[in-house]
Image 1: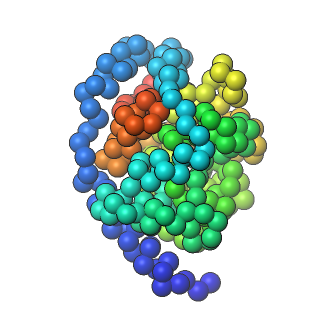
Image 2 (image 1 turned 180 degrees about the horizontal axis):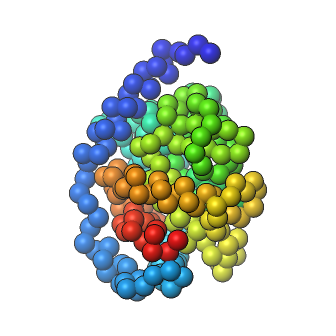
Image 3 (image 1 turned 60 degrees about the horizontal axis):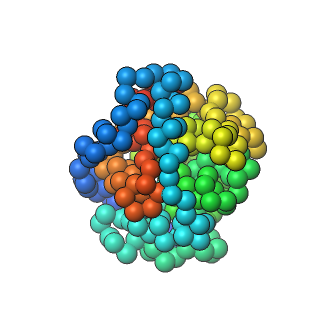
Length: 257
């Protein structure tokens, strides 16, 4: 397959941007301590339940509003005209969004078919798991569970895929894990949506996502960086007014699972 000069430039830019992102913004604000007061001292199912009670209080946005929100939440710290694509890692114009193979679109990290929620306000529009991604790469990932292994993914250097799983590049493995685990805590089936849960399988189209043993590893080896923390804060301040607890407290992953 011939690689266009445009795509080569994107790949090179993506590597540089990933490094720059680590230098941006401070750690989690002290205000988050009060936000999680009801969860302090708990573990296991009690912690999961307490966190659900906290983060279910959110403002919902429309699916069309997700476009503009992603231009803010995923803005390139080194270039305010661009967003950073999740799996590809490249920096790309905020306005090249659509259906062209070289455009970006809205990637549901918790695949829509794993819960049959489509684009409904709630899980279908939750910014804590929707990220900008190259149209072709988004299609390649499809609704696959997350696991190790497979062959290289065109336009997403460092990512791998096979018939039923997808492995993101190293720099966002933890991001993916924390997004999936947020969804498993936020959507418990009591608000008209499916009860989303994680397991240790590759699941197809059911309200489960995997694999939890791999996601736990990724949470450990790729802790939250400044880009992820900044994104969490923007969603809290400007859009949904709830937080991803595993960005603020990655140790809670092991405490629950």
